[in-house]
Length: 96
Length: 437
Image (cartoon, rainbow over all chains, first blue to last red):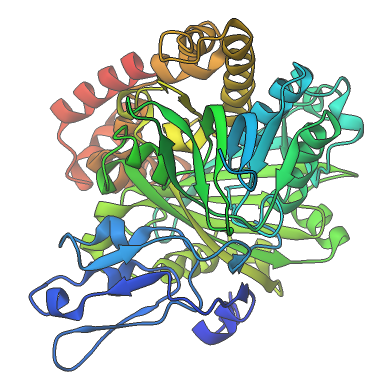
């Protein structure tokens, strides 16, 4: 059975985000450099964490589901600082 | 107190099912209640599997089914046990669930949470959207006296705070009731809403009118503890997986890849042919159950819904919205009484837990407190789906001219072929009986 699979960008394009000016999640790449598993890279359902060549993490807050997976799977306290975006900003689920 | 701060009898944080229900009861009791929601509208931040069990709504609106924004009424409930190439489905349908008071219903959370919050607002609750609660206010003795918000001069002073701020509950964490993280008790749900014409859904799933189908799947998550689901809405289908965070991180598999595998499964793919992705979503689920619940009442604050880990993820039963509503109603009633009595200390609010122990909210969680362990156990996830499918396949495979060997021998062959230890099978069976009794 063939099923037309959508690309990750197309997948994320189905979600509405009201992007705020403040990054509600910050990543301390200095901490990440000593991390061997980088679980956030694999587990984040929005694919927002990208490993850099120097062993750090590049993070984009703009298409965040605000689910909390990243800080829950992170094994280094202080690497990921997680708060909610400002009121009204962030993901807007239409169906949920 | 300066004039620009707000004062209320109670402030409820989060306009999900728990918060809306709590605000409703406080408003009904004539109390001045503020309901704060960080999304632009109730439900904007919420995702769930897809079925609400509505009987608790009897306490919200008489004949709620005439006005609730339902997609379909679940009249067909199937459990699918799968391997990558096989599926055994136990499929139950009844006309007993297609008329009031019904059993389960599929809804969109944007619609449902907005509707439920509307009941609270109609009763007199004040809804404030697009506002994040950023912390707790306390007096000199440490007692909680309100919340701080991200609005200018946004403090709200209240006699009671009801934390219905969801699975990541920063309020319960700030109050020291929940640990900062608990990946071992938390699952990630990822979901796709896929559009299909209504009549195509009716035909493919054998549904008529507003009847709906709910399929739960075991063995479809590539060995990561969890399960899959498929629910029918009016002209969309919700498909997704729920997986434990610890297992997901260890497997290093992308969540959307797990959905893609479910959709490509030979037992699922024909249902979804030609469907178009409308929305991808993700949310965490607190699955620690009764044993992981925080203290529910402290001086000046109650905790309800996902914030208090009130999701029942017990394999056969996957419920959360109903518990949130039940807990919210109990919290609102308790808070209203405590305010009237002038004692909103932990002692004055202790009736909250008693109320819920007497109702399904804590009784169900207590009864099935060990069930999630059984469902998410390694053998249940990795070995038994294969054993069951293999056994059924052998029983139904006609091997003429070789004669049949009988069910018992067929079963023990399947046990051997799947390298299942009989001793573990017996022990797991016994534990499952105990956990689900």
